[in-house]
Amino acid sequence: MLSFEEESMDALATPATATGTVASPSASTASPPTATFKRVNAADKRIINAKTDVNQLVPFKYKWAWEKYLATCANHWMPQEVNMTRDIALWKSPNGLTEDERRIVKRNLGFFVTADSLAANNIVLGTYRHITAPECRQFLLRQAFEEAIHTHAYQYIVESLGLDESEIFNAYNEVPSIRNKDAFLIPYIEAIMDPNFQTGTAQNDQTLLKSLIVFACLMEGLFFYVGFTQILALGRQNKMTGAAEQYQYILRDESMHCNFGIDLINQLKLENPDLWTAAFKDEIKALFIQAVELEYQYAEDTMPRGVLGMNASMFKGYLRYIANRRATQIGLDALFPNEDNPFPWMSEMIDLKKERNFFETRVIEYQSGGALSWD
Image: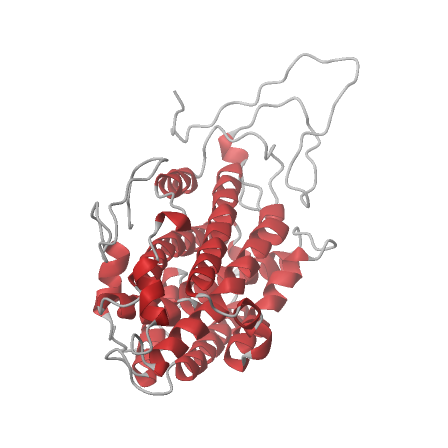
């Protein structure tokens, strides 16, 4: 049985061989260890710049990462399990949805169909290369797979509704409010995807930390929430329930991704306190403020008039509320004091624990794990 005890194993040398020492594998951009015939000591593990073998998952040091990996596996789902019949009939009906509601659906899909592909690229081609904790790398692999499932889900909705695929999938080039969000994100993804980039200096370590914050707190933790709220609001009014069910599962997945990212950020800070300078914190605060404004512009574009009991101005307070939460979770002060949550039902969506999904289009029986956890 695997043990989750954090006690470290003493390094044990193996008998010498004729070939002498062989470099034990570490993260692709980390410097290889000088000793090669040593078992991994948990105390020697680090989030970045470790000299330990990244292929040896145990002994565990970061139990929180492994536990989150197990939780995500237990929550496995696939888009085609969701019945879209009612959504198709509603979409095809001339009076099924208002033009404002149709705009919300199409704008949402226009952002999300490529957003999760960007997220997967960031993980597989960037973050994974620089993280040297095997437990965290294990979660990142699962996360990348889930991003693929999310892209699959959006494609499934687009195909089911018979939407113009080229219009939806190219929206991130054609719709300014979507393009502006992606233009904000891409430099922080590309910085760590650069084949010549490697950690090990204070400047580069801060570059990675900044990328992690933008990805976890601002992309997954902020840029997704206008869309989630809008589609789930449709579902609460018994409209587009199949799409809303899939968004509900995606919200649960992304909440776990965000929480993992925040834990990763805080552990990296704990191990490298010199990175968390006053100047760096000021830079991060400025990014938060910019991200809130970009997402509010997206809210105004998707919802030019009030609909579903919501209007764009309500999202200004909501985005500031979320930004405050993300900021305090990584050790910053709240940026927008005294902001309340205008959509308390969204918290219920995230925290919901029941065997039947909120919109009750089907009973959830996952083939893998069988657990439904919203923590």
